[in-house]
Amino acid sequence: MSAKKLLLAALGLFAGYKLYKAGNPQIPDNVTPVTNFELSRYLGKWFEVARVENRFEKGLINTTAEYTLNGDGTVNVLNSGLVEATGRHKRASGTAVFVRGKDEGALKVSFFGPFYGGYNIVDLDEDYQWAIIVGSSPKYFWVLSRTTEVSEELRARAIKVASDVGIVPHNIKWVQQN
Image 1 (cartoon, one colour):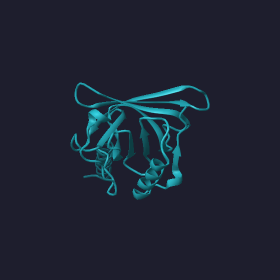
Image 2 (tube, one colour; image 1 turned 90 degrees about the horizontal axis):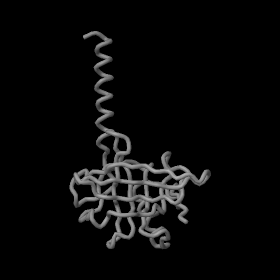
Image 3 (cartoon, rainbow, N blue to C red; image 1 turned 90 degrees about the vertical axis):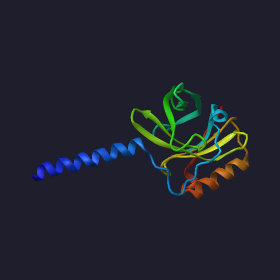
Image 4 (cartoon, helix red, strand yellow; image 1 turned 180 degrees about the horizontal axis):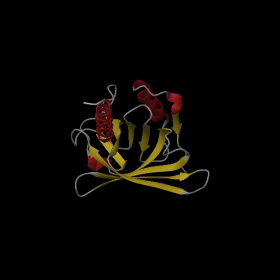
């Protein structure tokens, strides 16, 4: 095989591997999704009360996530927020699917075709009033609540969970909710 063909084959394998990884985000080794998860109780509107700032939510306030069941068993995800600097509303719609089983809070979410991000629910109120989520890496962390205000106890718990999975607590942004 010529050097050019070998290089093209290697590039093809690398591209295939990258596409596979983009479609199959891994659960980090130090992250344990909740078990005995009940999707029907998780569906509905949540307020994003904290996050690690990321490029697609930068500068957003009044952020929410709404989860509804699709006919095929996947979950429709509708994220929205207000761009603080301009007052413009921003929305993103995606699809979430379970990674292992429907009783485990390990999902992957896509907003861009075949590219998925991890969505691992690592701590969840027994009454489904708040949830702590970790992505595929420490770049992605969220605290969701059914209400716009959260207790100091939940804030402390979120900081502990973040620390336990390798997220620097001062990177957590507490989101303004009006």
